[in-house]
Image 1 (cartoon, rainbow, N blue to C red):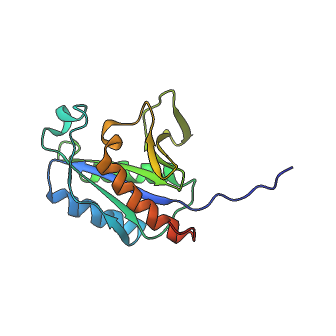
Image 2 (spheres, rainbow, N blue to C red):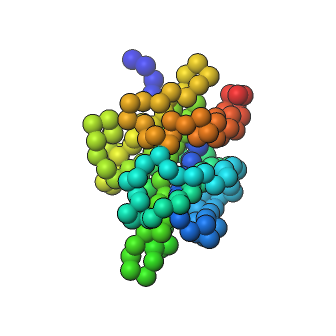
Amino acid sequence: MQERAEPENVNLVVSFFTGNPSLFADTLKTLEERFGHIEFLSEAIDFNGTGYYKEEFGAGLKRKLVSFERLIPADGLAAIKIFTDGLEKTLSDGNGKRRVNIDPGILTLERFVLATRKNFTHRVYIGSNVYADLTLLYSKNNWRALEWTYPDYKTERMMNILTSIRTRYAHKIGRGA
């Protein structure tokens, strides 16, 4: 019988988009207060891989990705999704309409996983009405998209950002690049 090994801590990555650039600062401030020092922040990226959010948010959406210096336990994603959903409500307009969409995920050397409230065949329930969506795999020095990977996560630009975060993570856990 093999001994149980505790999973390594993981790198929290939060992706968020909005049509109101002033909300980037408010979102980042709250995320940093909750999760600690920001280690990496991407530039604003056009969010146009899907029209799914157009009715709710309008056009001209921009996305940023942020990762944090402090690693988190591998089983912390559901609680973080609950927190970010609450932050979306806090930042909503006076009528309860979201003005920012916040998607937390975890990055390891092998994979990138997003949290979602929506069930689907490839998503695994992790508690508290939250599912883990295996979004990208990393092998042979490259990210590999899956048939269900969101279009914007399949882009070279997004994969380059995640590679940069992955490199930092590898150093934090003592595994070099």
